Image (tube, rainbow, N blue to C red):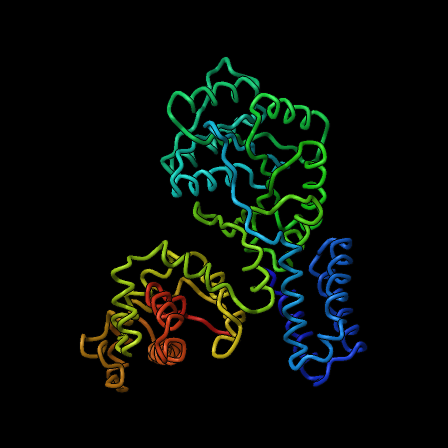
Length: 457
């Protein structure tokens, strides 16, 4: 996510630092490079123009040009303007004064409305709500079946309707009545889509809006379609009045133009992003955290939250102690590898780390998740003493371990090398104690995204 843009912006700032002194000339050159980077990231041209003008106005002031650290001030200005572009604050879902709150899920066909509706229902259920789902897509029976299957897998209720209910408004009306009678506080309505916007679709959605008076109208778009997603969002907003957006397939979009444009063009916030196929691969959109990731500052807060949602806290505290006391063994290493997959796509996790110091090359790491089972097998083939003290693993022992795990000596060597590198990295991050050191120790100890990763460049 945003990889290409992040690389180019960091290159711009590196060049600025190399200038020594900031001037109007090299600042203009930097602004031209930033403009090109944003356009190549498929950001809407009007949004780019507004962004560059805002940065220029603040960065060309005398206070910045003559400051002791002008480049750092420019980076801060760019960060602040990125946050403004993305929406300034994380936009929470609204709820009705009297339940059920109705969330109308709209968008074009193939954008991921149905899976997003199910993911959102799961998110709401995990956060203290009791949602119920309904599909009012009467044109594609497979769409309603898909929602039923997803809801069943998540153990969430879905209103499937009766044979007599053949119109969207009939299904929606009955679903709301079902929500009231069963004490559900949120009704998610998965609507029909088209390959393109047409009057029939908008008329149907307007009828549903008039009937349900929805608390939220959430537009779902495929981030991979770039500016087409932004144009569709703008059209839906003009004709329906959306209250926010959900971008799907953000994990596959290296440019990020839709995410950077959609709020500025529609005036409505981006509320969630889909970052994978699994039911839990839906994340709240935090403008400030995304801006930091774009600028290579990482998103440690989101990573900590993800880890704390996933792991056992007692185990985390024990692992924190081991990391701080430098008592992290190969046995612990193996145990953590077994939990790694719970955090989601590993390359996404690594992308949340700051691209500085010992972690500056993490964005280039390629993770082969299929290798994790093999690494576990290697550690399982060691004796308890070997797991407790990796320094005693001689050449002969490595041959025995390789034979016992069905691997090669080279693979055993690679695992031991990665383990040593990981211990060194953890020590540098957690050394010195303090609040941040302890939080990093807890974060990394409770499902370390580095522990035993079979990576290469």
